[in-house]
Length: 70
Image 1 (cartoon, rainbow, N blue to C red):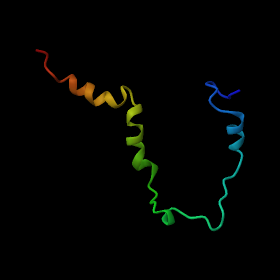
Image 2: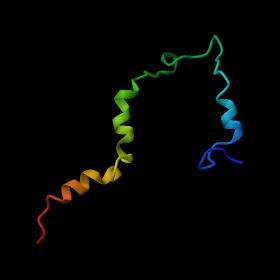
Image 3: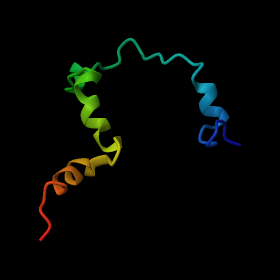
Image 4: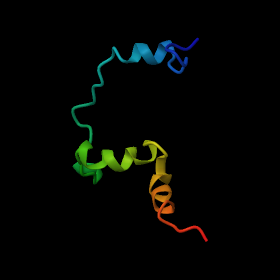
């Protein structure tokens, strides 16, 4: 049975939040994998853009208001 109002969390998922994520001493890091970390602030606006009111269509709706009806 899921937990939470939408029952979208299993008890196993909730239990895993109590575990520490530990990697091996010789684990590869971002640079070793060719990745460059960036700040959340730099990607958050683009990531959340579709979730605003009217979603990704807000700009189209705003533009359509400027069209003249024939």
